[in-house]
Length: 83
Length: 190
Image (cartoon, rainbow over all chains, first blue to last red; front, side, top):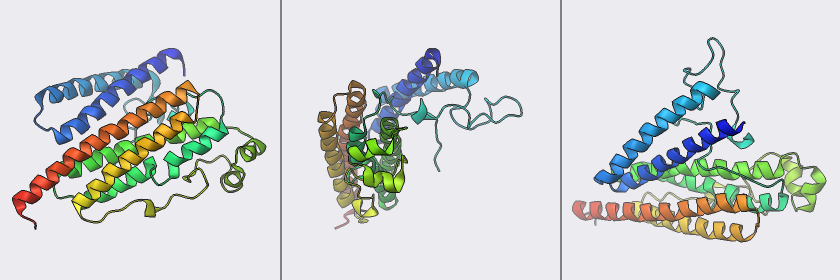
């Protein structure tokens, strides 16, 4: 995996973790509007970055949007333990 | 159901192979207070939780534990990948190699295989949440021991992240316990 791809994947991991942390916080603080706002921002950014990543480097999850026409790429992109 | 994403929750960076450290890390891969135990424990207990908050929290934390299990597996994989049998043997993994080669199998550092006896689901939400809080503390302690057993800065960094998650989960479970106890007060269960 080249440096540019790795840098984008790390950004995704970072914002993905932000969303996980806020998700757990909101589970026990459902009326905290500041956390809710932060969660919405994090998940919007997560969607944007994962779209950008998958367009360039192939699928992070199998949804058929980022495969080359007629060719299944899901299994070809690098596995997390091999990166 | 679950959706898999082809990424780790937190990066794993290791300096070469270190079979002895891989052996120690098996505590958190297949030991009693491992990430596997945590994931199975919470995802099993959620069915008998009385409030939506606790069902949600156990589902979400249980899911995160599986991502932690994958992080530990990745560390063990990287530390043992391509290591020849004699090196495994020298590091005390001769028995492990005999049965599993370089596969990543859930055992504790002494080779004892993971068992469901490491987890409990009593059907009593107060009892189960106390178990969960204790489990998070036990895992935090294990991470502190593991951090002392390595001088690899990459391994230390990932282990520190995982240790912090135990602290956060303990806090969230405490809040869920308050929620269950408030619910039981209003229902006058006893």
